[in-house]
Length: 309
Image (cartoon, rainbow, N blue to C red; front, top):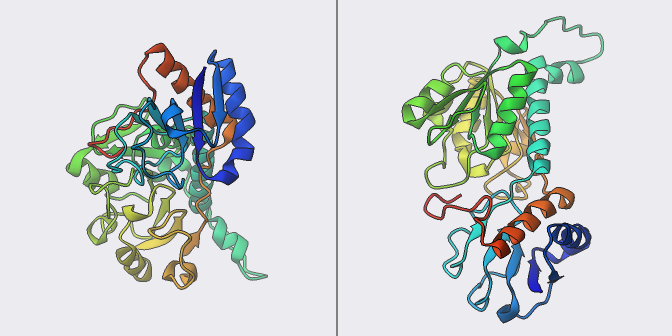
């Protein structure tokens, strides 16, 4: 019998308790799962960075911290965390993000806002280009970025993917490195940001890189707030270089009421809902990693502390 501590926000226990217990049992592991196990008796920690648990020193027996979020920037630098840390990758996250990104990409591609918001009697009879004539760039080719790039490609978009290190994704034009970023952004009409939040990715979109995009391009950011220089984006929106920005993530969340994004006519704010962790699916990933830990197999989705993700 192993002991598994649920150390995410307390209000998540109600939705996670049954799926986790079922998934762990189905993985063939006999476990006691609870929210109040003495630290010295804990074998695995199911975690969210918003948890009150911030000091891992007392958890001397624990074998791994299994994060329920895709993002780990709020925990990866914790000096008390000495054991393996995994991030959440599951089919529900990938599908949810792909649906959200594809929906907003199609919204901008088809010009839906102009039709929905037009005044009575205004007849906007302008057809958009076909998807294969629309240049879409996805920045970040991890699990979520790759899933989104593939779905957009299946719709028919001309998709380019960029990542800091070289990647190879079937059916997607893949670029990497600084020169590749310039090429990926040059002339792009819709840009989707799905990079991790690290010092190397901060302000990936700035005054210089925004100027590379096609005039009137649209930005879609369901990744991380610091990927964009806010002031540079506002200036590009005001000049018309950027036609619209749909933003799901921000440097400060919830987004402060007086922030200019709330009031800008070319900005859509959504409340960090692009991809939610759903207990039904994330429990399967957690259970598989516990099974692997007990079997002496490598953990899935292990975080590279040096890279920050």
